[in-house]
Image 1: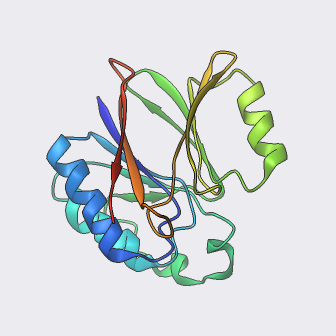
Image 2: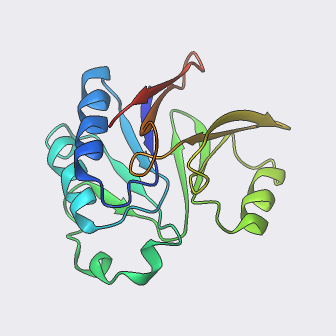
Length: 167
């Protein structure tokens, strides 16, 4: 299974639309958003592309998202699951944690717990891919405020990570 990963969209709809097109063309089976979504319009954009394809979208909130009341009005039936500040999902037999990583204590506890095969995060606006103990930690960079804006695709079967410009 391939998964599409993005973070820190900060309301940038054109970059999000580009990432969605890249993910769709690649045939991802799941999309993960690692926080600092920026507006419910970002979620609507992702839902418009992936809900008709029956591809689930999981999203966590970042520090910027805490000040918005948009989230409580976002329809629950559009294939986007809002997981709060921290999410756990199982993808293709892999245990996955999803968080923004602005809470460094929680981020490091999550990694050091050795509970997860993957920890996906955002916040730093910098791409990274490293393994700590038995946990692979991936940050796709920023899809909303970067030079360049980036998103990532991970093939869970091969382990190959591809980082793509999206803006």
